[in-house]
Image 1 (cartoon, rainbow, N blue to C red):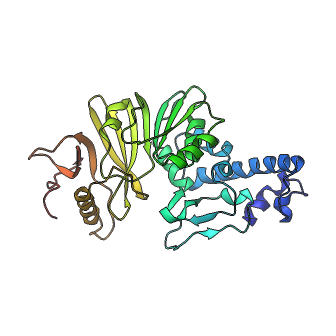
Image 2: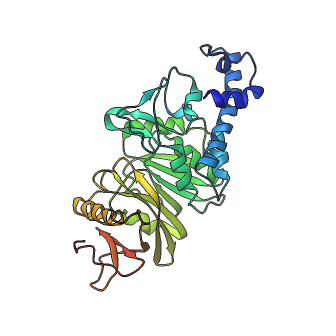
Image 3: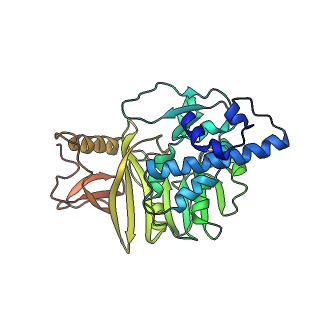
Length: 331
């Protein structure tokens, strides 16, 4: 934080409460000064994400993080935050020293509901996932799991005024908060409901913010040609990988784009499939070094006897890149 201030202090007024450590006065003049200062912080935060992620394909992602005010979506501070660093294991969030919004402009999770372990997710993680979508202006996006709406607004900024984002949240209270928070983005619609059942019509991208063992059939049905689905496939322990699916006519290319630990998706869990996924992932860790998830195609339905299956779950299976055992066979 202090380093960031030194990087930006030439652009911040010397009387700034951010630099002097004084409480932020909520007068109109101070409010305007703070808004200007927070714009600088958001710019620094977005450029940090650009390198930390890194964002390689679409700089609209960086621009979106630079303009969406995270504090709008997270309620009054202080906030419970959790950094993500290899080897660091925290049992509970770290509370920010005060309610200064600058604390939110770091690559940290922010607690939404600690009792349910609900967080506003890690910005670099979601920037990485967004960077695997084939973004074009005017695209139609389904977001499953809106939370309080922060990443919904980021997606709305990415697709622009000509695009459309449908953000579905099954928790009525969170959906109401997200809808109020999202009011400035006319291209963003927040729906209270089941994201695995809601019909958005044809969409160019679907991004799921909770862990399932299998995709909802309607997600595959509604993907446009060339459309992409990004969804976490997770075990009962909430760990797994992020599956990317690309529609090619009646076929679906499949790949892993990284590991994940995430809140489970209600209605998207199958206990037996979760055990099979845990077994498949454990097999990848048996060698001297972990290997990539060896998948190439998503198929609907049940696999045939001759299929080269890496993993299967209700209604779909993932084809292995090379010869493999059936997912019903032990390792």
